[in-house]
Length: 322
Image 1 (spheres, rainbow, N blue to C red):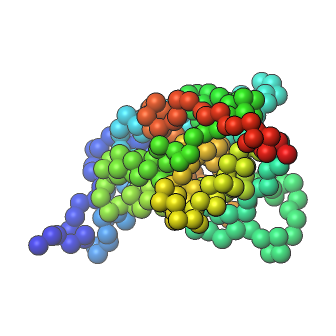
Image 2 (cartoon, rainbow, N blue to C red; image 1 turned 120 degrees about the vertical axis):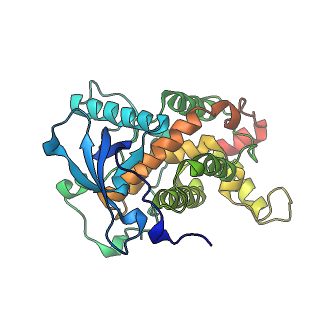
């Protein structure tokens, strides 16, 4: 008979070396005490944290949501957050195209190609609707929680190449993609889930994030993720989803399109999240999950991204330009 959850040990132990959030940053720390009230679930334990290199006056009682295992992946994430904070403190050193101070480092060029911002939500929260609120003043708009997302350089380079292939070279990502979004998210879940305590809130957050990415992708692809040259291709694929073609029947965008278009969504998320009612804590957790996912994807680019784009017929090119 399996032990009850009340009898199980908390996920972190006394004297364990961990990483702990303080504000937006993670610091190396040590667990000094673990407190579990009678009848309390193990995951509801409180931990007294001592931050390495800081005076004891900075010791803090925190819940497990602020703590991360001292792993290489989490150390890399902590380093990225520190680097990101330094770049924000230094401020912009020039008006670079495509760099957004209030969003991801890499902004999609689709903004100049008839983009209509989506009003969908993330994490199950309801969308903001025009009839539900009055126009906000500038101060309120800029005080909304936002994702400041750091995209690995290799993924930024792929985004630039993707833009040039489609908009300059009149090429298309071949469809159906050999590695669709749904498969990539499933592969990442298979990779990441074993690293988290079974049945913990960290697993739940991972599952919610990946489900949210898939739903966002399916709903936003045809609205905001396509370049003009790709719309004719999308129209053809859209018809096939409702046809009896066994290769497409019953499938969705995430079953057909791949990481090239998924990355376009990820760099658009800062704008989309700003339109939701997510609180800052939820935004921070989403950012953390996205940075981990991007880090993993950047190490697997040769496996998932296509190496060659296809050149459509002259009839397609003419149709796409009409």
